[in-house]
Image (spheres, one colour):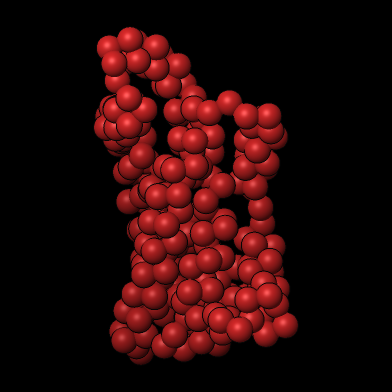
Length: 214
């Protein structure tokens, strides 16, 4: 028999954690992406290369890094974040931030040189240029948001390490699929799997829609 309360609880935890981590990653991606793409500094090439390399970081490694930092023996152990939704948010942030900031850097580096000289000649400030870059092609940023959220909501390894898959607290959809399937509760696993696939398909549709819209 399908326990709907468990299903809705797992969905709620997944959406909450993924939404918060994606929002923080997006806001910081806009800030750092603009600074990196529009400023010239000595180590810029290496910073961009490192961020690009981090896009492929294995989720379990991101989870392990966060675990070592927030565990009792870690430097932030006093904050008691381990096995909480906050720990999952941090882990997902580490996974998706490099992806989102790299996409935004690539976009701004393509658009900024074309706009800068012309707009400055008209007396535009850096704030005006930033505003135009953000509003000129909103589909780029919506696509970045969807890519980050899709990566976060489907992640399992890092969330399991730092979240601990605690019932009613940190057991998200991916963790419950693994747990219930292992216990033989195939119906719950299939139901959550179908919901996760549906979310992924909706996100993929949104990405393609906004790409074509631009």
